[in-house]
Image (tube, rainbow, N blue to C red; front, side, top):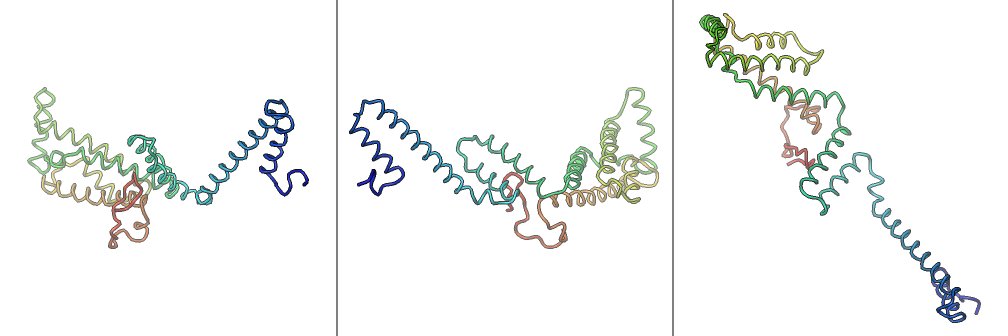
Length: 256
């Protein structure tokens, strides 16, 4: 039969290698060189096959959109066993930030950060301490406490008031950042009252009620921007009845 008969590919090469071995012997340089070349070619072929199989296994991921690839990367991180829980969480947070950039606009993300600063400052303000000097008696007491503070005998009430007032002034700046050019005259008026709560016109109870009402409205509006980073409900009407998937986990990217 012709060399190799009906054989082809690797089988034909192996048959030829066997012929060299029989003709020149297993210790001959001809056979050793041929064997080395055959093994190298076989290894290269195996590597290529493994690469093709790997490509085939990731074909769906490679065909995905940019967002789809990010989602799959997050899924793969959860399955990895070579990472500590802390390393997994750190990687997932980075991919979650990347996903957020893919599904939101820069203005909404900027507004959401302003909203977070507003909420943090609100938590540092005690409304009762801030509004305690309202009304005629309160304003008179404030003037007296200012004098005491100037002589080094400040009262605890005045110290707490100053602490909350500092927070209120910072909050006013943050609110202006949050609203930007869209700030309304009503909001401007509320800001003025917030940083100047001790007036003759409003007693402490009225001042406190106005502050709490303004805080309630403000937090409702800041939540709008945070909600817009998670889903489309705010664009469709945030006051509509929410589905059971109302809570969003920024780490897992899942609703619960």
